[in-house]
Image 1 (cartoon, rainbow, N blue to C red):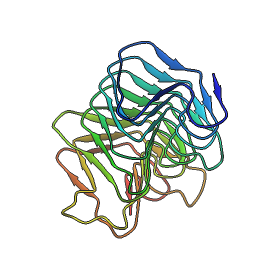
Image 2: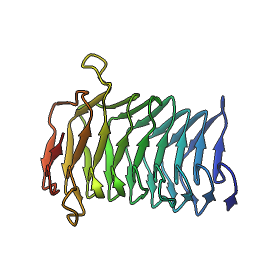
Image 3: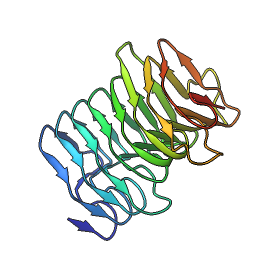
Length: 239
């Protein structure tokens, strides 16, 4: 399917609730955003795959402006094809995205291969699941553009592995210039960062797992492990 404007695969409007249990939302293309799913209401994914969708500018897989909960299933093999494309898997633009299980994998974009969190655009809460094998120039797993919240909490294991960035942030690219300690804008807890890397072919590459810019505070607590991440500068973390 094809849309010359926004959203073709599945549009969940404001004040609408939908549950995606199984099956595929796949093979769709949009020019602006949301090749797969655009959510402005309440959308719960308990299985199935949002896969092989694409958008020119942003949100190859999911554009979330409402309340999206990933319980199981996959957001995978989606892409943004333009040179400034953002959020190959998920483009978070407002309200809340909750990640309770399943995986976000094998997505690609210039910024935020797996997830792009727009500036001052709501919350992404990561409680359980895997973000793996995504690719981007910056922030292969997650690109956080400032403001808003990324909170990784809870005792259950969260895995971010095998993501590759061409330039900075094999897993995370963080712009947290305005973060304060008490607001917990960006909190990492009980995450395994493993085998994330930059391409290792440019002398300016930074942050095998995490690249951080700005004066804000990155809070790491609980049992966070950094295993076999690689870059020219800052194999695990560059700040």
